[in-house]
Structures are given as structure tokens and as C-alpha cells.
Image 1 (cartoon, rainbow, N blue to C red):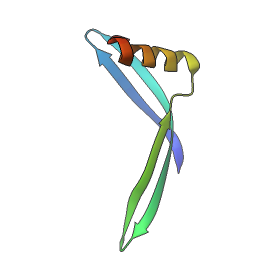
Image 2 (spheres, rainbow, N blue to C red):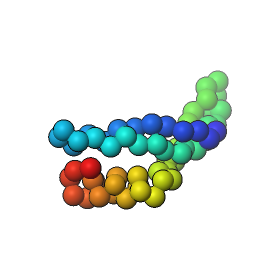
Image 3 (cartoon, rainbow, N blue to C red):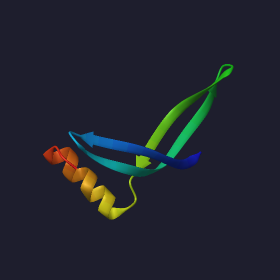
Image 4 (cartoon, helix red, strand yellow):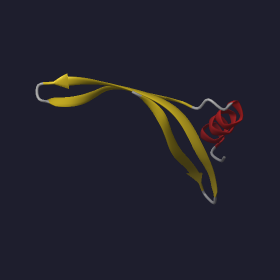
Length: 60
């Protein structure tokens, strides 16, 4: 399954809204579906740079 997720990084009064491309894999285990993998990527280079800067330095 592929899709998009939205997220938000908040540091103090600042916030960074995130757009994330995702993949998820599910497997049937017994009588239930279980998620066995989840991956997310920020595909916008500027947004990714802001996110990495924020988590490394402490502010968006």
C-alpha cells in the first residue's frame, strides 16, 4: 500500500508541517491483517533540509 501522510514538528512557538510519502506492507497472520513494514520519506528537498536542521539544532 502506498500513500501520503501529514505530520507536524513543533519546537516552542515554531512549527514545520510535513508532507510524507509512505509505503506499508501487510500480511495476514491467522485471522487478522498485521502491518509488517512502514516507511516514510520526505520527498521535497527544502522541506527535508528544514526537518533535518530542526532535529539537529532544536528549532525549525
